[in-house]
Image 1 (tube, rainbow, N blue to C red):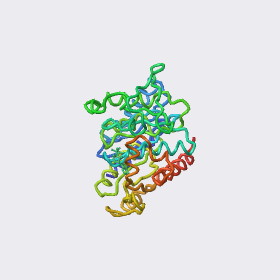
Image 2: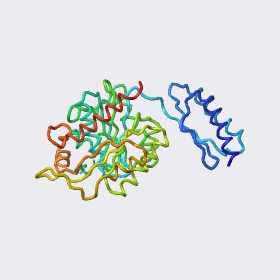
Image 3: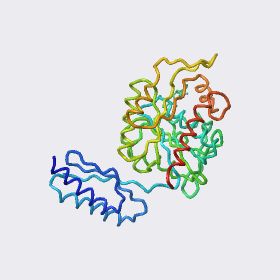
Image 4: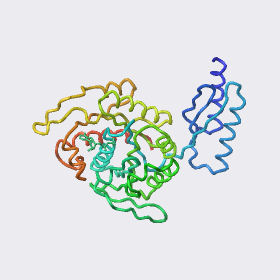
Length: 326
Ligand code: ADP
């Protein structure tokens, strides 16, 4: 154990030098050393030489059996905010769409990518169903959705039910096309992630390196366990946590607006505290949110009470963005 620790310390130092500070999340478990390498701006030869040097260094330590390097692209000029959940049906798409609209309302130049291959619902939520994006110089041009937010969705590319049968690389290529589209004039890209914590999510995060992630959960324990998995996935790849949003938290009475709590309160907030993650607020279960979402008139674009939690969320996300360097 002591031997492994001192090998790891020495190897970590060497990795830092050999990678010219491009390595992060260096870990060792059961003899396997893993790290994330930012390869942005490197030529193919430089990249090869750097990974070979790191792997070669690893072979010099008896307690290290393997070195695993995850390559990621340089941080982009457009800041990606991933909206993720551990499972489907918790309102991740609803939160993504309305966060994007609320950010736009507060003056952020924002676009929206619907990467939810299993159920691309953004075209419906932002009233752009049936539209097909044009391309220029082999890059897609975003479509204007409700509230004027430029957007692209897997649902604009394929029939929703067809994408489910796609294999990993096809999905990954399609997602890259959406993210590397002509986002001219956009500073922040909200990405509605595929639900869950599998390979598709991991490779998307590695490849496109979000600036931060918002995790959406419902108040029930089971959803929170799933949310914890999502937190782990992003932490593993070194993506900063913007925070936790509790959706469908309490029921807003359509008659008097009073909120009741069929699932209890405070679960998500307590979980966030336990995990040392900021709590960004709760969004009530409201019939108005559901009906206006289904009608393609996002609640965050309106003026009634259903807009408020999304505007409050956007303020927190905007504050978080301003606090970031660069
Ligand atoms: P996910 O993207 O996590 O699968 P969706 O955003 O598609 O979830 O939401 C699932 C369903 O729940 C949709 O019908 C949506 O309108 C509804 N919904 C989401 N959030 C709320 C909310 N706060 N109040 C009422 N209905 C909601």
